[in-house]
Length: 108
Image 1: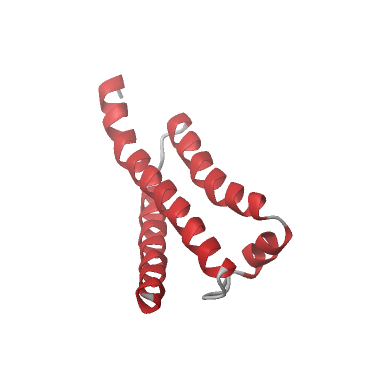
Image 2: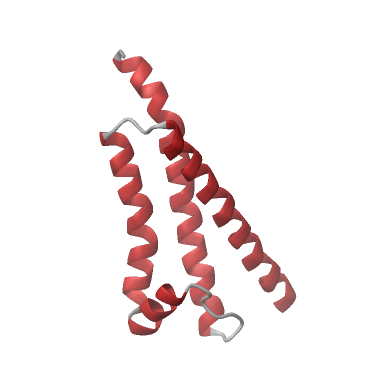
């Protein structure tokens, strides 16, 4: 495959991974806000443990994982199933973000 074709192939998964990073950042901010103010609790037991142990590590994990995905995507040609998995992760994160919006709307 030539470089132009390879760049076109990488663009979509990399864009999805970037949106995943943005959603992860918003999720961590809203989750931190909700936990600090007693509105919600972290549903993921592992992330709850991390949050209770060290908030900086909580943010780091939430941000580093999508960044790592973006790095891997630029180094290897992602297969179709990777694109599907990223799409599923985007849908799940979008759903979680809407849950955050819902409880924030209830607070207003």
